[in-house]
Structures are given as C-alpha cells and as structure tokens.
Image (cartoon, rainbow, N blue to C red):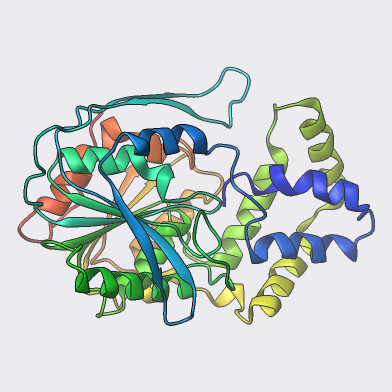
Length: 355
C-alpha cells in the first residue's frame, strides 16, 4: 500500500473532484485495486537481473479463475552484493544497488522452499534481493505475483483474504509439479505479509514457518492510518507538493471513512472486518512477526496488536525502521530469517536482529 496517494493525487485533481461527495468515490476506486505500479519498483533493472539467472516461471490458474504468475530460483552461490540508500531529494524513497554471480555449478538439493509474497503495487521481482539471500542459504525460492499485480490476472481484491486462497491453489499446483522441495516456508511483506498470515491458517498450505514483515492487523484501520500519513509527506516534484497540499485541504476523516465503506461495498468485503489477528490465531505454523518502530504507513501498533492477540507468535521490532526501510535491511534481518527457517523446533523467542 506504499505511495498510494502519490499516484492517485494527480488523478483526483484532473478529475475535478473539489466537492466532498466526489472524493470518497474516487479514493474508494483506488482502494479497490492498484491503479498502477509503484514508482519505487525498478522493473527494467529487475527484468535484466532475472535474464542473468537460471529461473523458471509459469502460470497457475486458481479455482477462482485468476491466472497467477510464479517464478522459481534454485539455491546457488550467487555471491550477492547489495546496498540500499535513501535518495537525497526524496526522504520517503529508496534506492538500491544489486549485483551477483550467475552460478556455474549444478544447483544443490534445496534444504527447503520459501514462498515470497510482495506488497501492494509491487510484484514478485521486488523481492529479488531476498530470493538471492535465501538462495545463498540453500533454499529454493518461489515468488508469486498476487492478483492485480505484475504479470497476474485481475480479480476483486481481498486485502489478503482472497489472495490467500490463490496462494494455497498455487502451492498445491506447484507441489504436484515437484517445485516445492523440502519444508515449505512463507515470507511476506506488508500486503503480502497479511496474505501469508491468512494463507497460513489454511491447513492445505502446509507451511512450517511464516515470516511476516509489517503486516496490518485490520485493513480498514490500516487505510485510515496510511492516508493521513501520505498527505503529511514532504518533498518530491513541485507538482506532487502542490497536489498534496490541495488534498490536505479536502481529505479528512469523513472522506477516508466513506471511502473505506464504499470500497468494501464494491468488493463485497467490509474492510473493517478483514481481521488478520483472527486468522493468525488459527495458524498451525511457527510465525515470526517483524515491524519497524518508525513505521507510519502501517504503524507499529498493528504489529504489536497482532503479537498481543496471539502470544504463540514471536515478535521482533526494529528500532528506527519504517515501512520502506525495513524490507531493505537484509544485513540486519536476513541472518535472523534464515535461522528462523532453519530451526528444528519453533524458537521460544524472536531471534535478535543484527545491529
């Protein structure tokens, strides 16, 4: 759900929705399905990187009739070189450099399979650094483009609920094809984290470990938290700043409340009833929840609420990290995630992240 307002703001201005009744309808339309791809996603660079990798890909059509794109990468000695930073002119953006070796030796037998689920307005390729890091650790990784994202088909969004059914269908099909090897683990970010938690409650998934980064606890509450924060952001081109100022004058709590209700009516899914904690309570998997203390897109209160609702889940909070920086922190998080997936029993406490 990153950068939603940045993309819809100009559309709102051009559409001339200066009256209160028009704003909820327009905002609701952008809550129903992504209006595009996040400008944070360097699609051309990711495609060029995958062209150097021995990846396999294909489609699975789910029981709901949605074609979902998947891509598998085998374990190997990728020798990944990765750094990330914040652009000087955009304190709310991210930039990263990624390089790696193309393995020349046959892939070793995987120690397990990790399914990676991306965030809103992203796609499976956005998690390539994590795919490589886990591949170096001996795991086969499989990314899925969720419905309405990337190369997958369009269908009513479910804020993790319908997407979870899609994931279960894809896993069943890939198991039958022999793509799932060893224990299955799931790693999700934001929207993908909520999807992972909903999917983990379905015993057909058969996942052993779940890692959920910066999931929301309740979809309606997350939208109400996110929109004001996006309007408070600074920086960017003058057109974005002007549009953001215009929207601050016109979008208030009443507009957001009405948009949440209308989006739910369109989706036949009341967003205030999309309760991730309730699904987590039924998960048989060993779950690690991770949140950044400085997250304002999906505030840390969501992560803490999930942890409080289900004490059996483990919770790791990283001081100072926000919604954009947390998934980029492979140096701090990857060792803990790899240890979590490799533990023979469910750890009694959350593993400490590297300093």
